[in-house]
Length: 306
Image (cartoon, rainbow, N blue to C red):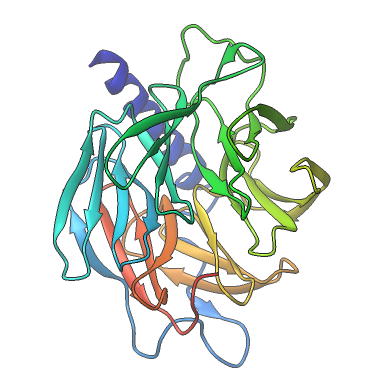
């Protein structure tokens, strides 16, 4: 319990330092608004609180049935918001599950910060360890993940607080090859990688360096390796997502900032609380679900998720 509390306090401190200090000017966030002929938000829509009572909400992920799953890291739970608005617990003792994502078979993958591993929960509830080591060394704190069309899994591995024993020299990005036969390091040299998302065509991968206050984009090669690292925007992020038009949504402060594929700011979405992660969901994948430390919000959009 002491370890969970320590990491929880580290997460809160990291959120304050990264997103709430005057130097970043993100406490209130940039002024809400949009650039272009029309907003990405559905006409008249505002963020609506659809779940509360969380201690550190994270990891929204939609299944194919209109449900949205999300995590409460300190409580070590994975929760589900059904289409009728009911919230239920689907897994307890999650090892500090943070980022979530479904594969095309409907199995749910989770980055477990406290357990220092990536797991898969089948539709029947069976749990399988997917990755917990690379080159014989345990990971730091797997944070967020993205699954490509072939079933390969990219995930970030930062440190929040202390890791004892620490076995990895850096805070890097890893790739679990399709079939889960091997884990390889695909990006290093980052301060604290966090949010991660790839494009639908499998050609580009975005990685937010939370500690470096930057978001990078990589080209994805045929074997899953990353190449041609370049700065996307000089703005870090916690979790992030993409819409069907190729716009990327970055979290942090009391807003979600949206950039087009060239890095031009497209819109700033005001949110009542500090944001931690974001994902599209709903039956038409046109609702934006936004996690905050204490709540989950939903916002109707004009665009669909990718």
